[in-house]
Image (tube, rainbow, N blue to C red; front, side, top):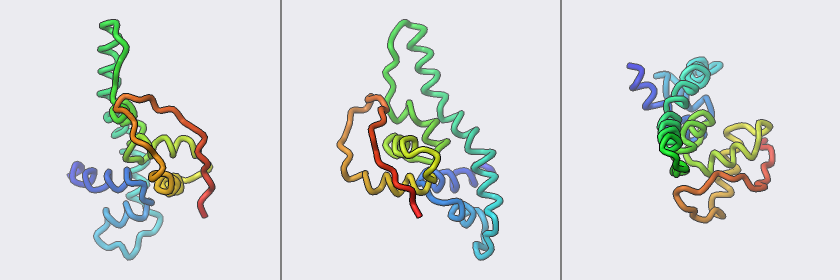
Amino acid sequence: MALAAISRLLPIWMAGLPLNKLEAEFLEDSANLGQCEYARHFVLRLVPDLAFVAGLPARLLAARAKKSGKEPQLATVLATLGSAVREGCDSPEALATRINCGRAVSRVGARKVFERLRKFASAGNPTESLKLHGIACAQQK
C-alpha cells in the first residue's frame, strides 16, 4: 500500500510542484485540502528516508573506488540523486539552481527560476562536477 502512494507522490514532489498538488493526489476528494496534512507527512517523514536510499548507490560506488585506490567517476545524476530527492528536484541542474537560490527562495520558486534558465543551459558531460555559478534568484511572489 505504501509503495503505491510513494510511486504516485514522489514524481510530483520531484517535479517541484507545491504541497497542495501532493495533497490533491493523495486525497480522493480534493475540495478540502486544508493544511496539507498528508503531503507534509510525506515530505517530513518519508522524503528524508527516500533521499537516504537514493544516495546509497553513489556512496557504495565511491567507497568501492576508494578501497581499490581509484578516484570515483560517478555520473552527475547518480552523485546528486539523494540530494535531488531531498530537495524535490528532478535533475542535477534543477538541484544546482535550488541550492544556488538558497533557503530564502521556496522550492517552488527555485523551480520557476530553473524553468526560466533552462533554455540557456548547454549540455555537459555525464561526469561533470556540480559547480555553482552566480545564478540570480529573485524571490518569487
